[in-house]
Picture 1 (cartoon, rainbow, N blue to C red):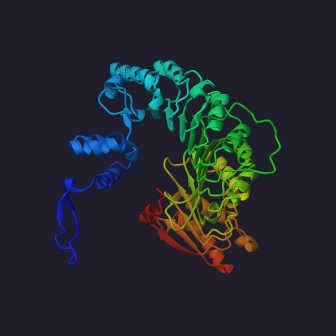
Picture 2: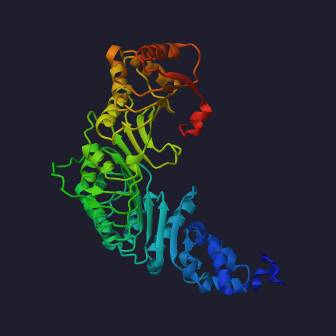
Picture 3: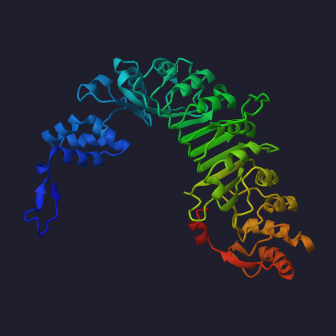
Length: 489
């Protein structure tokens, strides 16, 4: 291996030198760049120590500087691995268990034995997916003690797995150094998660995914737990199905607990739960909010509106997209300067199949629960895949109610099917009411626009009426390439 050094007139003789001529601290800096990722810290450094004796010495002389970790996957008993390598922090990781039943059983047994061994105090990360049901009891039993070095815990069960609930002695009821906690389909007692969260002062990433009914934590308790997480940046709370619990009526507090570092918040559940939760917290730096509601007939969520209004970035979003699918309708606010897929954004989705319910739900949300939409100048309305089930008897007024709050929209982009329904709805506007909906509209962009056809006929009547009213609207084609560039596929 060679390292090239530049040659200058005032420094003659400087040229190509072998990497072995570099001092140890220079080698260490190079090695640090080489292992600067999670996978590298657990695997790449093995290559370095096998190059030569000096490299091995440099690596093992600075394990903390390089952040070296030993990854254990259960392929062999843990003592066999520890007999080979130096004393380093342990990562228990098994992303995909073997399909072979014998190997699967062997790996799971070895992992549980490692957690239950004298080496548990060295474990800093546990990342286990699809834990076999037959080993859950042993696994849970091995985790009934404090793990003093643990900073990362990601446990994922398969949907439908029926296993025992994690008790309040899980991790000894305390995880003071925990930074990342992710649980998917894991049943836990409310008191157990409450103890963990209140003790995890360094928590940065909290994700409770597909929370079963057995793991229900009231919004009041959750807000109390979050109030202690001053470093929390990512919060994800997703219920597997609408909770069977109902929240008792409670008076919202006069002040909210501030989560000063929170930038990303995802929620899936019922509006009642979210309302009670966001009434108790504030996140001034939030720049990504994703909300998925199960179907409800009425959406009355003023606290969510207030929560969004208290953020800095979410109030500046200036572009909107409505997408209809077979089983849901989605509403997204983002920045024009960025693509829909990667921008700072507010995303709200309602899970339902009936097209009239989709329109009704979204109209309620847009008219009363989101930040003012009166400044948005671009609006996209599309159908996604799988395609929605459009009903012929949908009320035209529902489309008008959906469009009503977008008083500043100048450019309206529509997919083929949507354009037909909106075109028929806009025909209902007559006389003085012609500009009650989309009064600032200047241009309609229609996907696959053709000179004639049912869409053109429906839209044409609206365009003609607007022309006569002194508020002309132009019609242009919106091709698939433009749609793809917008991140709408």
